[in-house]
Amino acid sequence: MIGPGSLGAFAAGSRLFATGAADSSFQVALDWAGSVLGAGVPVVDADALPPETLSVAISLYGSTTALGEQLPGGDEPRRVVHALERRLGRKAGAVVALNLAAENALLPVITAALLGVPLVDGDGTGRVFPLIEQTTFTLGGVAATPLELAGPTGDLVGLDTEPDRVEELARPLVLALGGWALAACYPMPAGVLSRVLVPGTVSRLLAAGVPGAPRSLAAPYGVRTLCRGRITEVGGSTGYGRDLSAPSLPSLPSSIVVQESEGLGRLVRLEAHNEIVLALADGAVAAMAPDQICMISALDGVVVDVDKAYPGLEVEVMVVRAAPAWHTGRGRALGGLRAFGVPL
Image 1 (tube, one colour):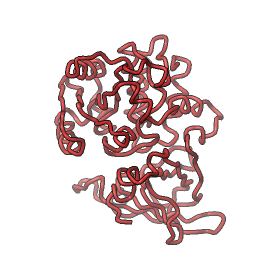
Image 2 (cartoon, helix red, strand yellow):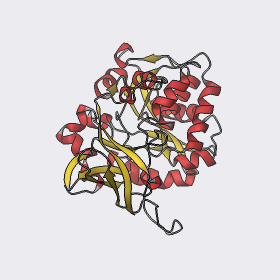
Image 3 (spheres, helix red, strand yellow):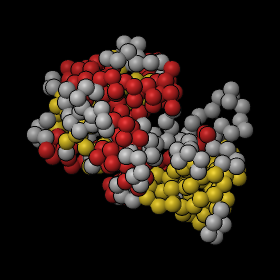
Image 4 (cartoon, helix red, strand yellow):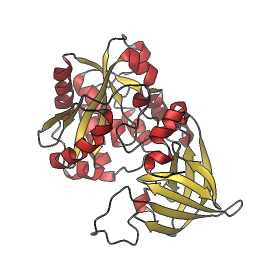
């Protein structure tokens, strides 16, 4: 159960390895959740639901910054799920998170509270990927479509297309909707969901967010520290030392160099395409996608986004092991280096 007494712990757990989260939008989502939570939202295992129960994945689509600036009307969760129900001719009986990072952990809780349905204990990635098709649901043969988008200005948009066309079609639509939208996608029976989700991740965040709990609780398949040190160089499209008024794409390559402050004193180079996807220690591969590579600030223990990195910052570089499904041939093809444009 996520109730008034545990919402804070769940929210704290959701930020332990979250990249791309903006403080303003996270606070909007947290306040929104607190206002609708009531007595709480039940958290259930997928295999505890009747197998035919329709489950719907919920996710923020678009910019977290836009969510903090273009505030939700409050009815987006009901509108988006009801639109998908009308399309399918069935009522949703459960909500599942697409991923559980920051706002994306709270929006499914809000949706479950407003609809009066349980939240499934698990998610569709076990970490965060930038594209909506980069999920264990896709690896399990479940399509993201039909998909519905609800914008903050009252608009609804439905998509029913091939899985590899969703991003191409949805990104321009989300910009027109106000920069962000709530997505209801990957509709499937609970019997299928129990086969394709990363299980137990909601419970893990609840435990990891308790004050004093180890950060490793939020990493279901293990986490290791690659190095501790000081950022000495930042280059590429991170935003540091760049004219921010000049047009650029978030997927342009960028690099961050960390001088290890203990042990072997290695130079660790972090290569990023939207997120850090490759770590080289003195030129040797030390970690790579699909595992998640994070920089944790030594100042406050918060994840440092690539575009917030700057020389002189003390960081701990941590590697969160991805779910086993990502370490298969199909998983690496969908979420590994080549999926980010790195031919290695």
